[in-house]
Length: 113
Length: 112
Image (cartoon, rainbow over all chains, first blue to last red; front, side, top):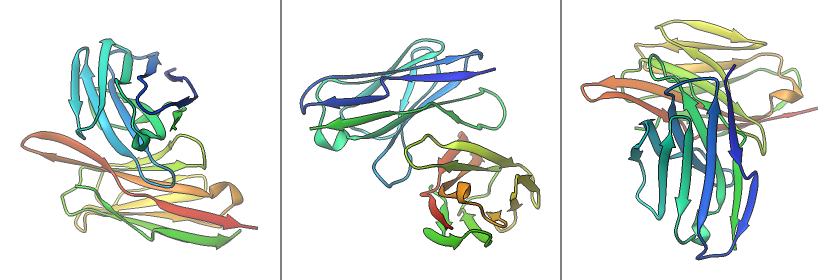
């Protein structure tokens, strides 16, 4: 069966510090991978998605970036965090072919102070 | 383009029924429903692929009207465990490929 991991689970960072969030998927090959951000009490904002190694599409221009160094690894980064980067970051995967049912990881709660 | 969900929020007593609607301005290929409990990640409930299709999950069912470009989620005899935010996700296809977008969510609170 497929599982998706995210770490860390929670993170408190000062403004201007760097960020690296990691997501890994097990039990499937060549998945589509997604990064979402959810502000408190709000909906899901798609940040990045990837259909393969090194292939990243950005949905919202901002100070975040994403990389996919391996087939089942997806990393979200920032060089300098802003207060507005606080939120709940969710990684998701879906199969490449067919309808894109997305399965979410447990999420990382980020607080920027 | 993001689908529209209604209502934005609903409060129920245990045992009452509710309907959540999801509509799109584009022709839909499929509709997905997710539930997110407070502080947790969204969990997939069901997917509807064909016009007029209905599906069920526990006492939660959904319909998909292709012509009207909308889907409805029916929660029957609601339980406390149904509380959470319900998101629909709509899949559309055009000449550029597939597009999947989540709606803004409907917050459901079930009270004892």
